[in-house]
Length: 305
Ligand SMILES: *Cc1c(COP(=O)(O)O)cnc(C)c1O
Image (cartoon, rainbow, N blue to C red; front, side):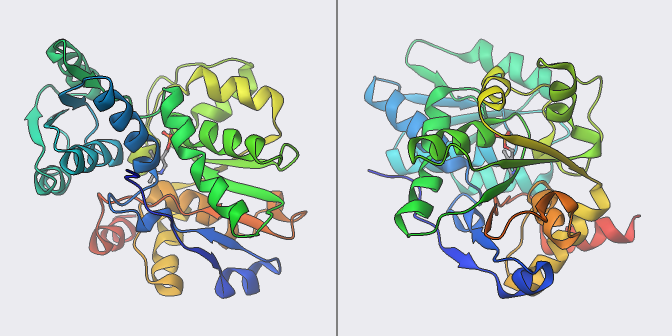
């Protein structure tokens, strides 16, 4: 059983006209859990279920937790998600909708995560949000689909949080013989852990995260992302929160789909006509999605500026 959907690949008239190049959109926002995460999380959940896991545990109040909850519901496996007190009411509600048990513990994600890890019993599987080879292998299927549809992008634009999406997309490019296709790795200013790592030449931990793009808020990217960036062309790009939010709002008008600012960061690269994109004729943008913000909340973020 495949838990994710094969998503549409759109040729964006609005973005192509704006940028003067042929912009392809991989519509991961249309996955049933609201983001690409179900690809890797689905594979990880299914594999651990086959290996005997009878409960899935997650510490993500975001799209990773939602994907685990969705996978658990489809596989008939109970899911426990431990989230910190800061997790929004909407995120908790979405988890409940997927029939997950939600435990609120601690003031920060670190505390919730520690508690989640302490709950692990023998037949439980802890599902990591970005650092697991099964996740990367699952995420890579989005590139398989693009190639199977006959499209050969000359660059891929994607957002980076912990680097799981980046690792999966590079795996997908390499297993389809697209080793020379560069990845443009986009972050917001307050969550630029990949930028910091490329500068330092190793994964470094940011002192703090300060962004509305909460799904990009990993203080440190996974080692795999650094390793792959050493043997695949990757260009780091940084946008502001404001640009990310405005891109989300513009994208609602252009394509009638709501995304989170984490996804808006990638879209902002195109809307801002960033120089980094200028050399490419057929860029593919991963519209990674995001389910925890409503259109109204996006509007409110601009009013608050
Ligand atoms: C998880 C997520 C990201 C970042 O993915 P990583 O694998 O952590 O780099 C970006 N956008 C959305 C919508 C996400 O859910």
